[in-house]
Amino acid sequence: MLQFIDLTKRYGKADPPALQDFSLTVEEGEFVVLLGRSGAGKSTLIRCANGLIRPTSGEVRWKGESVTRAKKEELLKLRAGMGMIFQQFQLISRLDVLTNVMVGRFHHLPLWRSLTGTFPPEVVETAREALHRVGIGHLARQRADGLSGGQQQRVAIARVLVQRPKLLLGDEPVASLDPVTADAILRLLKEIHRHEKMTTILNLHDVHMARRVATRIVGIRNGRLVFDGKPEELDESRVWDIYRPDDDCCRPFLVHESQPPVSHVLLRV
Ligand SMILES: Nc1ncnc2c1ncn2[C@@H]1O[C@H](COP(=O)(O)OP(=O)(O)OP(=O)(O)O)[C@@H](O)[C@H]1O
Image 1 (cartoon, rainbow, N blue to C red):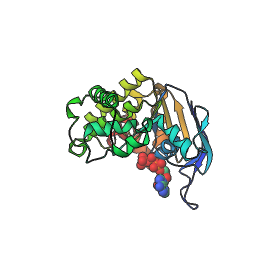
Image 2 (image 1 turned 60 degrees about the vertical axis):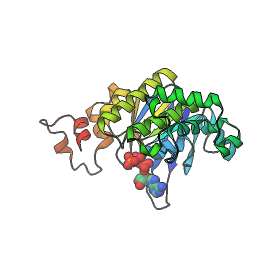
Image 3 (image 1 turned 90 degrees about the horizontal axis):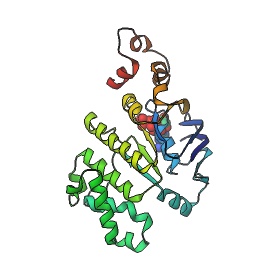
Image 4 (image 1 turned 45 degrees about the vertical axis):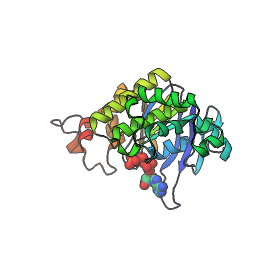
């Protein structure tokens, strides 16, 4: 169980809070998609989950242990059970694909192996299997920077698979990809979720895709939770609550009867 308890995050004293009194409990095995406008606080929340960002107040607890209060060593241990994928993939560009995937096992190997970059045969085998699983087994010996965005995200997902985390966090994992590739990556994540049952939290900018993959959708607006429900409960007025501009300036256009539903309009802007 992952608990966000009364989180508030201010980056600067004078800045408005990126998160404000934010509480949410995510049960094991859920597939949660965070929706919200740019700057709503989605990335901040995801990064608080694995301690990349410390909240100004409040606490994150993972399986009962405090991520927020964990000391460096404890935090590294907690993070070993949390995989993360990013918009910009975060691969080591000069290394080949297979080595990038094996990096996912670093947490579980003795320090000398990390320092020398040598991996036991079973790790090599596990990494090869993971690459096949994500559909790019044939690219194992290619340099990471020679791949397309979709292929790089598959490498990043394979790296998470060898890590065998209990929690997968995705900070806009498909935001840099074209719609067809984004769709393929989300299908892959959904299939992995179905198979591994790992708790998954992603933030996405696409309402339609969110409805398709999530078991639960959380809407964030100005750092506060404004929707928490099943995909089928996210009707047009709730989509509007999440995305409406603060001054309501565009509402007459967006909800005009002759217009497609808000979620469709939002997909196109
Ligand atoms: N490192 C930082 N320093 C200062 N302010 C930051 C920092 N990171 C985020 N913010 C601010 O915190 C608020 C929330 O940002 P955050 O990136 O969490 O939103 P988001 O919903 O993920 O947005 P997007 O969808 O555009 O990525 C924004 O006002 C943003 O400008």
